Length: 224
Ligand code: TMP
Image (cartoon, rainbow, N blue to C red; front, side, top):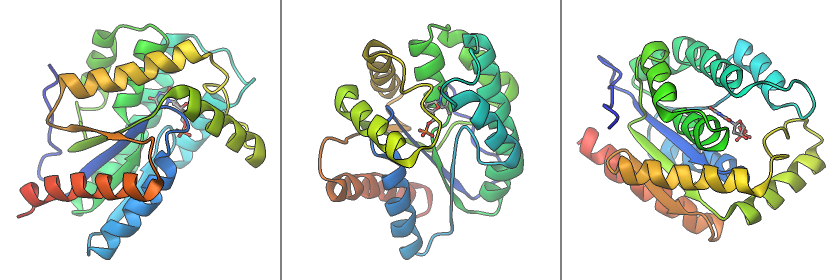
């Protein structure tokens, strides 16, 4: 279905981390970055929505609990605006410099949240991705798979403790988050090559070990 567009003329490698809220992506991003740096790679760790100054402003208005009642299509366009700024200012330059870009969420989240979650058509999301993001797909998408019931509790309590006002999606019901989880699994089933599903219902060290071995395997194919 998706034709994966390579970031042409770039020696870099892009990994996206995906999963439901509370699946452990941020912790994995930290440990995976450290492990890849230890192995001698230059790593740029970043995240979406955000990753640039303008993107951080968009993140605030998209994620604050009571900020704005965006319609699904408006939400989709804002996610894409943040992504375009991010690829122009951060992702493509890093890939062209030969770095490993480790991005906490990318287009997979748009398919899952705005598509399966909000009910927008996947065709619209993919068309927009092709038209506005140059059809840039990560070399590898790691999906951290966890029951949203467990994950959401984790995420909600973390938000409460940190007092960061980013709970707009966490406030949505379990049915929404179940559709999101299923979408990630469906994406992985449809696109076996660049997607790998990692069972996140295990101690973080085991999740990290498996993620690192998936990354190393694909890196070894790309950079023999
Ligand atoms: P996180 O960065 O803490 O994982 O939270 C970002 C939230 O934004 C998360 O609930 C998923 C949501 N999101 C979308 O709905 N669509 C997108 O395209 C992206 C990148 C994130």
